[in-house]
Length: 186
Image 1 (cartoon, rainbow, N blue to C red):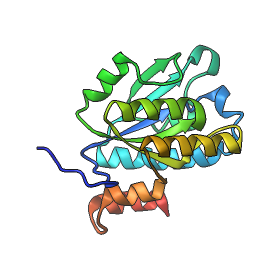
Image 2 (tube, one colour):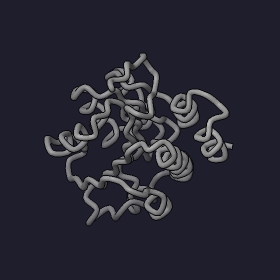
Image 3 (cartoon, rainbow, N blue to C red):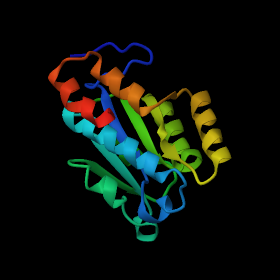
Image 4 (cartoon, one colour):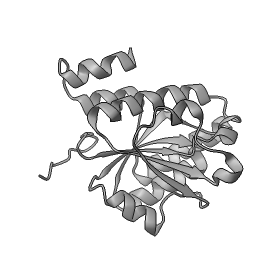
C-alpha cells in the first residue's frame, strides 16, 4: 500500500534510520559525543519499537575502529556498510537502501560537514527525503558543524531534532507505541 507523504511529515512505514560513522577513534575527538550518543540511542529505541530498519556505516574501520560500544550494543538487527569514500552512497549501497522500499531517511552521525554532508547530498540526489537530526550529528569544530547543517539545508534536507522526529513518527499519544517510547525521551 502506498502511503502519501506530506511535506516534512515522517511516517514510520516509510522511514529508515541511518547512523553514519560513530566510530571509536573518530568520536574521541568530538566535544559533543555524549549528546550524539544519547540522541542516537533514543532513535534506536524508537526504531526497535516502530520496526524501522537501521543502517550503519563505518568509515575505514581498520583505521578508525568500529562503531562505539554504547551504540553498537543498542543496534539490534541492522545492515552494516563499510566504506572508504566519504559519502556512503555508492551504486551498491544505493541498491541496498532502495531494497527496503522506503523513501525517508533519518540521519545521524559524524562528521557533519564531511561524511554526513556528502551522504545526505547524494541521498537527496537519489530521490530520498532526508531528515537530519541536528542534535545527533557532530564535527570537531563548531563552524564546520554549522557549515554542514547549512549546506544540507540548501540541498533540501529537513533539519530537525530527535524529539521532533520521535513525536512526528508517533503522531498520537496514548497508544502502546507511545507508552513504550515515552520513557526514552523523559
